[in-house]
Length: 166
Image 1 (cartoon, one colour):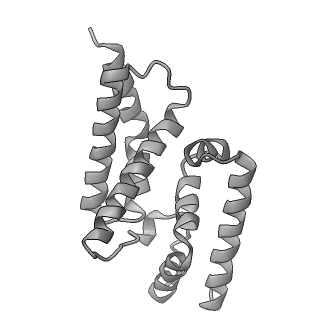
Image 2: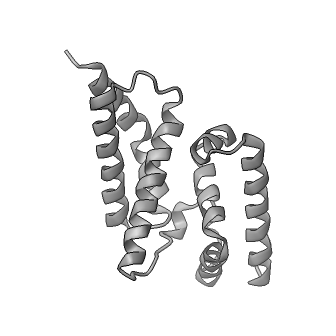
């Protein structure tokens, strides 16, 4: 017989593992994304083993908050070691891939020109609702929507500067 903690962990793994991996893959290479995904689920296991997790209201938001913290810890470690930041594989984003290679490189460069917060919001928007993102970031859903809209407009403006109209 499985414990509640084990059942909860399996549910979170089965339902969200691929989404958490893709969240990390947008910014990191395959190996790093796998490591960060494993670290996220290790943190989940530790938490639900101690606290049972029975009081978690929104599992998806809670899990992505853990993933965001794991990512931020990793970025902090990277900056301490003066490593370069990789924004991941462009083909795993929501940006259409019908463009030629030069345009894809321009899209990646445009994404890199966004602020860290804007990149984070656009990445999370693929997997979470505005309310869930707000829960992760500690802001209102309407503030999330406004910030996402601004980030999309900034990306569009930057793309236009590279000669790509979307």
